[in-house]
Amino acid sequence: MNRTDIAIVGAGILGLAHARAAAKRGLKVTVFERNPQAIGASIRNFGMIWPIGQPQGHLLDRALKTRAIWLEVASQAGFHADACGSLHLAYRSDEMAVLEEFMAAPRAIDSLALLTPQQAAAKSPAIVTENLLGALHSSTEVIVDPREAIGKIPAFLAAVYGVDFKFGTAVTQVESSGHPTFIAGGESWTAQHLFVCSGVDFETLYPSVYANSGITKVKLQMMRTAPQPDSFRLGAALCGGLTLTHYEAFAHCSSVSALKDRIATETPEFPRWGIHVMVSQNAAGELVIGDSHEYGLNPSPFDKAEINDRILTYLKKFAKAPSFEVAETWHGLYAKISGKTEFIVHPEPGVTIAQISGGIGMTLSFQIAEEGVASILGD
Image (cartoon, rainbow, N blue to C red; front, side):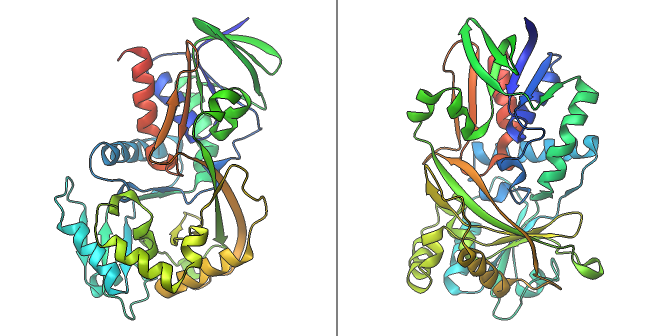
């Protein structure tokens, strides 16, 4: 019987975050990943650590703590983390109304500013200034390349904390009578605690829990350009008015309703496909562009060219770059539970299923893992 203190299923960002949280407390940690490397939602996103999207209070605090950990881990593990901030650009009066209402509310942090068009243009050479009314600048957002980060964090955790990674090893059966025992790669294991952080794939281990969870799935289409020529840098990550209707941070603004109504009337295809448009840039100079949101338990595996075309068309209304030629397209699949940021349950003694809802794993994972491990250990 193989033994470890903490066993983790899944080497995506939430699994890695739990591994770090447990290992830095001196525990023996073993991570099981059924693929030779993580290939799920954790590498199929913008790489945005996006505190500006979280509402005031506990969620914003979690996001800021996760941001701090990202910067620490990036420095230690040797991957690029660009603390470039973000700009929400307003070209219509209803968009500007949301920004003004948002900024009028009491704030817990002083990292936000409402900028004039001229001030915004100084933050990014990519901004389309024609008809720009103003912009919300936030200094808290950080961009990483998720493929690079998720690739390098395991080696860092192994070298610094002794975390043992079992790639290409699927956990196929779990039983618990106080301490969980499980089968991984055909071998028997036992642990003090098992964290299942395998995204919606936890359905294979706990089908009844999944069936009763209220989880649906959301499919996001995204694109990436080749590296921009002449060392062009985007500066701050950019988004337009559509994004103001997407994130919970703006949901309290009464002016959002009028913005949603106008969008639904003028461009019903945007809410139909859940499109809101953002662009970031990684260290290689590639622009990452997206995205859309198609909901359902069994989203189509086939991407829609129409969605990507509409994303690019809208992007060019607020951003310009030397090249928007698309080098790669893909989609990610995420869990979604209405009204919840995470799904955390204990289906049997010594077992925790942890799942982040709605594609905000990069923004919240490290702090959610800190809280989860501390809870189990009684910290």
